[in-house]
Length: 386
Image (cartoon, rainbow, N blue to C red; front, top):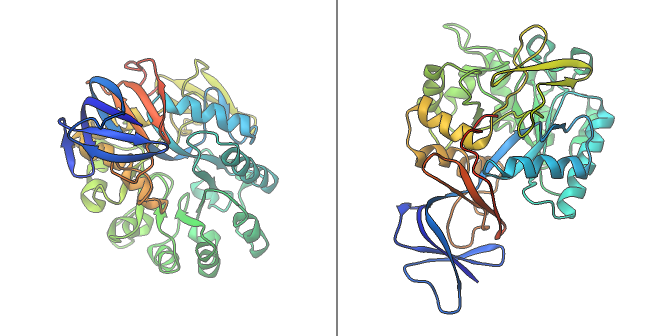
């Protein structure tokens, strides 16, 4: 048994600096005023203790892209890289590819969870069932409509959560309903669908929107589009990239005003450049260049991001004009709820898994815990994004 003391702690009920967090095994056993007898005292030196961050869209990190080698070792490197920036739970994410790659990715995530790779919560399959008109950096020759014969593959994950991003016009409402009935989380993205088509998908079980505003039909005066459907519905979740490049800060604030922090969650859409000094990498043979903190294809299309979850939290505070408590909630409790893990992850509270992150006053990550296992980390003050 361990007792974490001497920190400003963001608990489920708000900030406290006069309690200790008692960890026993992989769980938070109690929040107490005094260290219990026999517990090992862990002094957090006046830092700030937050719930561990959960990122549902992680394409790569540490110089590796999940698509290039969908293996346990790739997942291990990506998860370890993002842990340095406060991510204690993540979904390795495949962008549009051949279905053989999708199958390999699902098997790799199953194997990674079985092997106990820390922080892996499932898989995000972003495409290939998208609209090529809104493909972004996805390769057009990989994109195709969803066919019934592909459904069994998407439902085949044995461990963790499966999140599928699809364009509602590339799938039928019946297909969406079957996926969600099988436990797959359906999210809309890379779509030019009209409002009515998106609404049909929501009515059949779709619960998320992938990087809202980016790569989707916009909100217009007589055509609400996908953005309008996402902002209107009070129950669906939306991911948002708070890197200062994907969205104007005012647009970010509009999304927050419409959705609130309980339904708007921070994501990174991170690429191999996170935790790597490489300035160029390939997606299906196409060069992606890093210019400062932006990733661009040859036609200047944004290609994911160099964002980290620590950077996303700071970006949300600065651009969204919210406090650390709100931004951290959007990085922890909200994605946990989206994944159906609200009673397990995303909060510092008794009974929850002991996933936590310690940051300093600049939000540089000092230490993290996944399932009660800690790791000291070098401060990353200058690496919120890179």
